[in-house]
Image 1: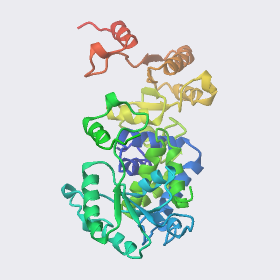
Image 2: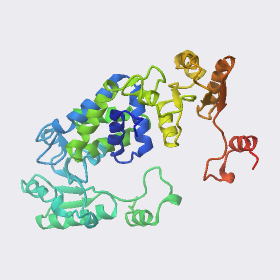
Image 3: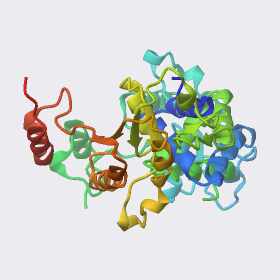
Image 4: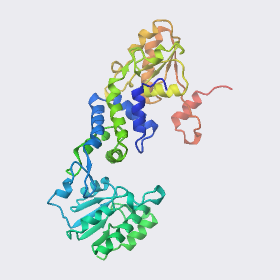
Length: 198
Length: 198
């Protein structure tokens, strides 16, 4: 439209391209920034610009980091016998908040034949050299409990099995604070399967 | 947290400050940009940076524009006898899409005593000089049909009345494609009040 300044239109388009942001939200965000103090738009701009330049993939765990090897891998206070395999860096954040003290291995996705993503598109094989030092005693496969996550977990389990290292899968069951009545059947049957004796 | 690169944390914080974006969405957007092509983050950065520098407030209609006076005010094809008073620039967009061909006057807010916003905080009085040329024959008050929007509309109506210029209010009623059954009482009673003969 001729009535929107070009730069406003461009920012709306940039926001629209982000996941979960539709045309209306993109407009709202843009006009919010127009009214907000200049520093706010600048902060967004500067950090978006620096994002790629100031981050690297740690070549050990493939988490996004400021340095390679990353802070977690070089932290002597962490339990190096335990590696949690996760789908993406957000899962590292989630596990950190849950006080996990081991190391990570970030796959950057899941096996998904429908999206043309096979094991070779992910950082799966890269875990093998890490297991040869003899330091690792357990691999916790913490991919999401989705169909793709389960398939990826199974693939990794088979890959690691010949090495004789213990592999475990995070528990699936009712979320804490959840309600039996509202749980779906699969979750419930998993919760039953995974029951434990007092 | 020590485990997130500083620049990632900063972008998450910048996103979080935007309206309607919570901590989880801010994380998701940031990690999306980490995986997206570099150009995408750059486009967002460049347009956010240019946003304030390349836009001005038109000193006639107070719409956000690339030039002052703005494109709409200088467009000879528009009906200069009609001014729609709107709350903010997004409303100009909406009316443009609805094919409104007159001029605009953007208030940049509504009167809201609870938020300490009185008429002096808005661009209300600035409409008066525009009405003295004798070119304008009708003011359409198109503030939102909310409590604040109605109060602001009433204030403007009283301000303009002494000038003898016709003031109208956009119709309130059932939205097109809406359902009587799901309309709230106020909307329904407005729709009844505003009924028209065939």
